[in-house]
Image 1 (cartoon, rainbow, N blue to C red):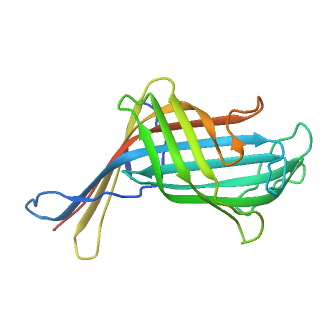
Image 2 (image 1 turned 180 degrees about the horizontal axis):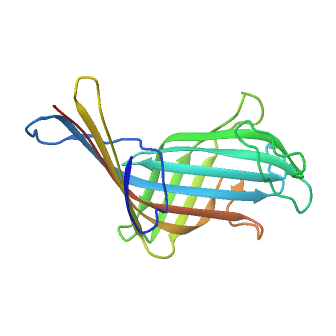
Image 3 (image 1 turned 60 degrees about the vertical axis):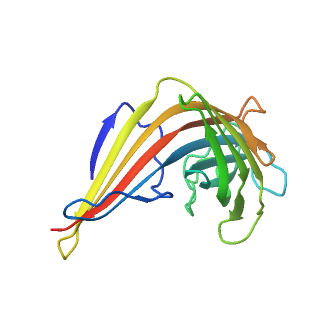
Length: 222
């Protein structure tokens, strides 16, 4: 993969083409698709107990959102029971933490949703996500729910742009190429997911970024 970077990439999200528009035909090109939209991501640490039967006293999470008019969301939360003064140093995604970490992995929950709304201004000053997500426990056991989401990103520092390209040729000689450009900005986080607030306690930690993306995909004859 060839990567061209200008500045520091503030957010790298999974490529999910959501709006595809066929470009005018070119000589030797079989098809060409283009898409654009908005993206945002947030990582957090929530200290203390949560309502609804959620286990543990330390909760680590991530949420990424992307789309055009309607936004898709995907992420996870890991719940830990930690001794006083300790923080998780391993585990997650089915892995157990080191025995001397002072923390025990209690649960892992997946977060996903469709049709959320993400608004932001052209200068990437602020963005806001609203809607509802689905939360399911890994393995099918434990607390689940459909919490409402209201998260605000407030931009800090300068914007940055990154371009990612990839291509391959199949056995018939047809070449497939993809190109993705992201323009994003780091941000402070406020708001909440359900009963969990990002900035309602002094020991909460949340970081994130938001911005825009453009993608193009094409295939060409040998």
